[in-house]
Length: 224
Ligand SMILES: [Zn+2]
Image (cartoon, rainbow, N blue to C red; front, side, top):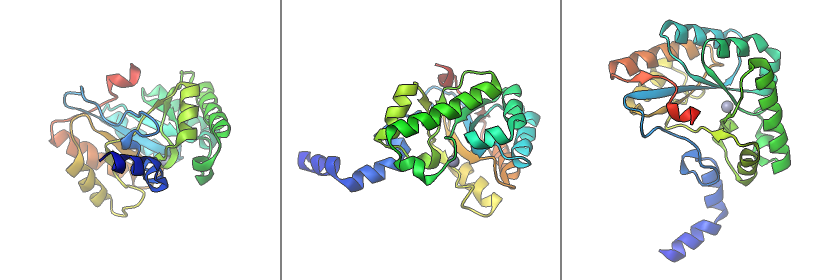
């Protein structure tokens, strides 16, 4: 058993697999689900702001009086500041999702990662007027350099327990079924607000959440 751990511990394959499995908490201790949520679940949206699609998601959230977290891309936030302001004004939280969401981010040295996340944070703080401290790694990839940047900037990393695969599965109904089949009390659901189908998917998921007696909200642990 010990030998197995040593082999796993030094295996490059293990390090790679760990880097694409945020839930393993190998590089970064991320918040992936709530253990004290009661019947609450939390919805998160990545890759915005996206003009046209993010607003439709915001409309649905407003209609159902639901608050969520939006992990925003810095360069998109600069291009669409009015959407960032609307997100925050309507009671949602904004978080960091890197400046550009490039594959290069996942192999960048720690200093570059730190600079990138700090720049994204400053943009979101300037636009929102709020303190920004939440972070979701692009592609969900973590590694030693990203971990170093997160420590340095004192960010809270948010993972997920239910992945919708909404960017990969073409049918909104299948995405809704997938999430409905996996949702649980304390779940953090990973969604995207940049798709033309995002609002439709959200509507379906809210319906399924309600049918199961669950309540979508922002967990208290986020503010701890
Ligand atoms: Zn993303």
